[in-house]
Length: 600
Image (cartoon, rainbow, N blue to C red; front, side):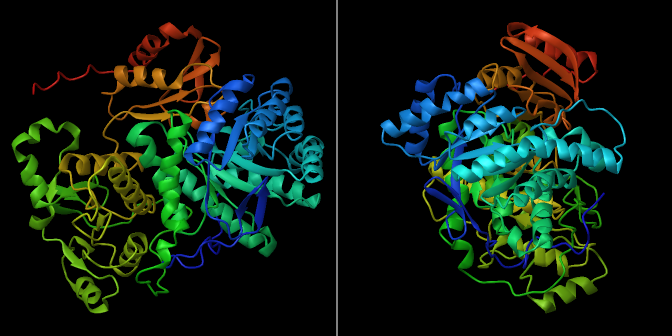
C-alpha cells in the first residue's frame, strides 16, 4: 500500500521554508512554533540509580542538551523519577525530563506525576506483538482500538490535568501485529499507528503532543516522516503538531554521525523537524555537539540566505517511495556508472596525485575516477539553453552542477534531475566549491562530514545520483572515506559490514560500546553482512528486519542471537556470545576469513 499521489509534505521542494507548527510546551522549553530546533538526548544510567542519573543529566545540560529523556520500564522504576527530578531541582537544574515508556501503561501514569513529558510508542503501549500472521476484520480491528482507548485515555487525561507534554513516537522496529497485518512493515504502517493514538488524544481535546517516526534505515525514516507530514496536512490545519527527528540505532563513530545526518539533515532541509536526537552507541554527552552542528544552519537561518531557486518543475522522483533515477550506462575511464551500476566515487586530480604512490594501501577507500579527466558537463540547472543542448544531444553524458554557484545543493540537484533527460547520469557534489575557507580542525572535519552526508545522502535517498565527489574535505584519505561511508549509510553501495547498533539507555542489559567494538573486531571484514547489536528487546526484533544476524540482550548477562527477526539461540552467557555469533554466521554460509593485512 502506497501513499496517495496527491499528498504533499513540502510546499516548495526548491526553496527552504520551515514547516509552521503549533507550540508544544515541555516544562520551560517550547517546541515548534517560533522556537529554535531543540536538542535532546537520553540517559544511559539505570533509572533506579538516582544519583547516577542526576550526575549524567547535569553533564548533558552542561554540554547543551535542552531536554533529557529517561527510560521507565515499570511502575516501581518510574517512581524513582520523583527523586531524580527533585535532585536536579536541588542542583539548580530545571531541564525538562521525558519518561520513555514501553509496554507498561501503569509506568506512564506514574511517570506523568513527576516529569514534564511522556513518550509512548504506539506499537508497544498496550499492544502485544506475537508476530502472528492473521487477517483482522474491521470489527476485530475496532475492538483492539477500543482496548487501546481504555488504557490510553487515562494517561491523556492525566497529562492534560498536569499540563504534561507527550510524544507519540512510532518505531519501525516495534509495530503491533494489528498494524503489521493491515499495513505491513511500512512507513504507512508507522504513520497509521501514530495517527490512531493522536485521534484518541484529540477526542479528549488534548493537543500538547508531537510525533516521531524513527527507523534505523534512513530511507524508511525519511519516507515515514514525509508521509506523516503529508497526512497531517491532509487532515487539516489544526493537525499542525511539531515533529521530533531521529535515526534510531544509528551506531557509533563516523558511521553513526553520517547515518544521523542523512536522515535528520535531509528532513530539516525540507523544513521538517522541531527537536532532534542523534542516537549514538557512545556516551550520551557526545551526541549533543553532533545534534547542535546539524541544527545550527537552520537555527541561524542560513538556508534563507543566498540565491533562491524559483521553479515549479515537477520533481523527478516520488518522495514517498524510493526508486533510483533511470539513466543510461556510461563507461567513464573504465568505470561503468548510471543505470543500475554501482555509484562511483570521484576525486580531483590534486587528491588523486597525493595518494597515487600508495593507492594499493587504500583498501576499500580507493577513488575511481578523476573529475578533470572524465568529460563531465557542468552547468547551472537554471540555464535553459544548456539543458536544451544536453537534452537534444544524441549520446548520454555525465552531468553535474558548476562549482562556485551560490545555490543550495539539494534543491539545485533536484532541479537538475527534474529538467535533465533521465538518460543522462548525474555526478553529485557535497558543496559547490573546491577549497575550504576554514582551518582543518576536528570540528571542521565533523562539519564537512555532516554537510556531505546531508547533501549527498538526501539526494541518494531520493534516487538521484550515479557518482559522488566530496569537495568540502581537503584531506584526500578523509574525503574518500566520507564518500564511501555516505554511500554505505544511504544503502546505496554496501562495501563493508553494516552494523545497526542502538544507543545505550537504562534498559540495556550489557555494555553496548565495548560489545559493539568486540563484534566489529571479529566481523568487520564481512562485506555485505548486516549485524544488529541491541541492548534489549524493545525494538530489537523489528529493527533487525533488514539485518542478517542479531545480538540482543535477553536478560542480565544473557544474550539471544537472531537470524533475521527470528531468535535461534537463547540465554547465551555474555562472555561466550561473540564467539557464538561468529559460529552462527558460519552455519549460515556467510563467513569468510579476513584477508591478510598489507604490510606498511
